[in-house]
Image (cartoon, rainbow, N blue to C red; front, side, top):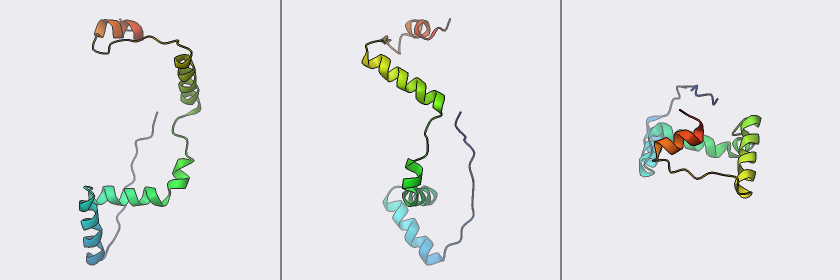
Length: 92
C-alpha cells in the first residue's frame, strides 16, 4: 500500500520573489504549490529515479504478468461486460 501522508511546510518569500515565481507558475498553468513541488522534483530527480516505485512482491507479480502476456497466457474481457468481468476476476 502506498503511503499517502503529506508534509506541509511554511516558507517565506520576499514579495518580489513571490510575484516572479507566481507569474512563472501561472504561465505554466500551475498553482504556486504545484510549481514549487515541480522545482523540488527537478532538483532531486536523480535520487527520485533510484527510489523503488513498487514493493518486491508487486514487482514480481508485474514481471510474471508481462511474461504471461508475452507467452500468450491472457484472457481478453470487455470491461463494459460486468458479468464477464466478474467471472474473469472470480467475483460472484
